[in-house]
Image (cartoon, rainbow over all chains, first blue to last red; front, side, top):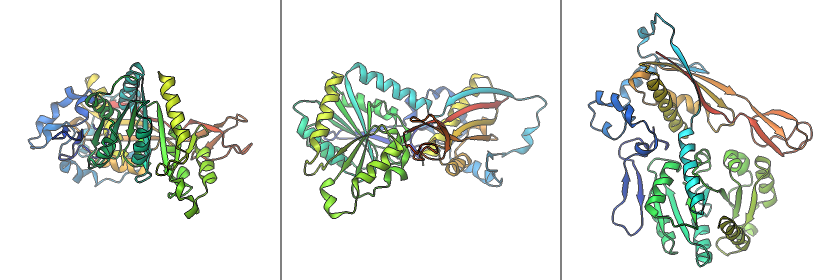
Length: 310
Length: 113
């Protein structure tokens, strides 16, 4: 299986690109490394389809669909009886208790990343938000301002283009772009691969700019020390309760673009109140990455966090 | 959209366990899924219906146990049912509560031969 939605479609592999290098590294499919099920591939030899070689779960689905749609799905039980006659058993099937978290594979890899970061004194920050909240600008300004004190490394996640990586590169920080293709979030395996390609040095800050999406990335631990959710004042105060999972799983909330407040009806106290309802542990920074207003406190927190790690 | 990748994860874990138990067929997969697990149940059922399945799981059925969410107030220790992260405590109206049940996203068991 692949942790990334839809990325098991042929032609949409995850790509890792370091700006300035000629070609992207195509990462055949994350699950080749991630999910120790390579040894279970027996069945894919049954299919003579040209595109199934890359991974076990890429079989064209057509042969199953025709059947499954013929059956009504009860609300709770979902049945797939492509061959109903096969259900004549003379003995009792065996029930195996599994009690395993569905995302355990990702969580395991995330903990591995976390241990690696800890051992190397790397402060990893998972930056999440809707598209267009100003994550990349925030990173550009932060890196430019603090790069003499803190070595920065950046992993950029987007479905397509290396635009963000190019913007970060112009700040001088080493950066790698992950293009998820159809995927809507980064996962722990992608981070593990990217960190190796990027050669992140000891005692540094690693910014991971996640795919702009307030839903899916919330479920995937990357091994970060802090999850930082960015919301801009153009977005509406009720975003924390509309997309509560992301705010619930973050520990830092940056409210960006406060220079626009005079032109908007945005009530900054209201958004904080909503966010605190969802997560009473949240720590806030009110900033304008563009004008620099409020950024000092964020710089101070980042510097302290970095020193605390050192 | 992450329901598809979650489904593929479920099928992987089930298949691995089945193979470890020398099974040839997986009849049933039982899941515990909390109301606040971040899973949309309709999307999950759609993903389950459409996810590609290996030969040993071509007839598999799913039992999904929906787990209600329960929060515990940090101020007055009241435990109450909720369907979101921002319901105030019914006893003291505080928002200072933690979810103690309802985030499950777990494969409970498989039925195999």
